Each structure stands twice: as C-alpha cells, then as structure tokens.
Length: 239
Ligand SMILES: Nc1ncnc2c1ncn2[C@@H]1O[C@H](COP(=O)(O)OP(=O)(O)O)[C@@H](O)[C@H]1O
Ligand SMILES: [Mg+2]
Image (cartoon, rainbow, N blue to C red; front, side, top):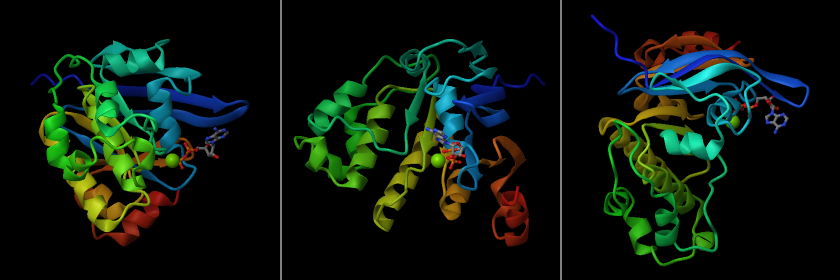
C-alpha cells in the first residue's frame, strides 16, 4: 500500500524569541482528512508552533512542507497563498471595514486540492454574520469577531487550517457553533490543526491528538485513548 502524502509535515522545528529557545524540535504530520488536536499546558509552545509554520516566527532550524513541498524562507503571505490559513488567538478583523468587506478581503483562488467556499456558506454556518453584514467589524462582539476571522480564512480556500484557541472566552452557544463549523470544514476536505484548551471540544473535534510539553511533541494518540481516562491524560499533560 502506498501511503498518502501528508498535507503538512513539520520536521524538527526549532524557534527562538530573542535568546529564548522555545521550540525544541517539533515534529508531527497532518494527513488528508485529519483534525490534529494540539494540546498541552500553557507555555508549552502550541501557539509558537502555529506561528513558526506560518513563518510569523521564523524557525531557526527544521522544516515545514506543504503537500511535499518545503516552505523554507517563504513570507507569511506567501505561505497563506500556498494554502495554509491561520486563525490567531487574537481575532484579527479589519475594524474599519464591514463584515462583508472583511470577507472579501479573505478571498483568494483555491489552493491545489482544496475545496472552495462562498460567502453564502459562511452565512449558513453563522447566520448572525449575515444579519450584521453591513456592520463595522470593530463593533462586533468577541464571538462575532471570532466567527468572522474563521470565515475570512476559509474564503482563502486553504488546504490546511491552523486555528488557535477558537472558543476562548465565547458563550456556550457560540462555542457549539464554532466547533460544529470546524467539524464541517474537516468533512469537506480541509485538514485542521486545532489548538484547544477545552478538552471536551478538542476530543470531540480531533481525529488525532498531539500533546506538547516544553517545546516538543511528547505524546500522540487517538482521542478515544484519553476520553474518560483522567489518569492517562494527567500523565500526558504532566511533561
Ligand atoms: N512574543 C514572545 N516573546 C518572548 N517569549 C514568548 C513570546 N510568546 C511566547 N513566549 C514564550 O514562549 C513559550 C511558549 O509560548 P506559547 O507558544 O505561547 O505557548 P502556548 O500557546 O502553548 O501557551 C512560553 O514560555 C512563552 O512565555
Ligand atoms: Mg497559546
């Protein structure tokens, strides 16, 4: 059997903030039709891993490959154009543009092998955004800004979506809408790397879990291995 080429390969990635060595050889891969749940304690390096993949924190060594092609030396916007969308923890909306205008800012041709999306689909996920389509993004609630950031990223028609703590600080009803949306994105063929503090959500949405500790991946397994197994989870997260 010939194994399918991973969509994203991260190999022995190191990164620094100034002199502080934060990523110590992160390696993992994301195959087609996977949602990889990246979990770990605060400060373990999950956000930096996503930023290093995007080139926002330039890796000091190691490599990232998208569909078998190395991304070394590429700028963040080039990496986005190549097919990796990134939704940072700090919801990034253009505050002086309307919801519609923000969505249009995200549009780009589909990456190779990626499904393509329309604003109408975004409004199906989040009807609230349709109601507010002519509102300036700066006056949206935190939850609405999160929905808008996710939708704007999807309209770039990515092959892979990297998403950092998307449900942080959201009301339970919006948490459910966001997690349903991520599951649907995955069903339509976008691979996802999900950093999620809420374990119930991470376990529900992910198809595979990677645990970070001290700047590297220390464990890997199926959500079913840890769902309901508090002792194992505590051991995994103790690194
Ligand atoms: N901009 C920064 N400058 C310096 N150190 C940082 C910066 N961002 C994060 N760090 C440090 O890098 C380590 C990993 O942080 P981070 O990737 O944000 O972890 P996580 O997302 O898992 O909580 C932590 O020790 C954190 O304090
Ligand atoms: Mg973080």
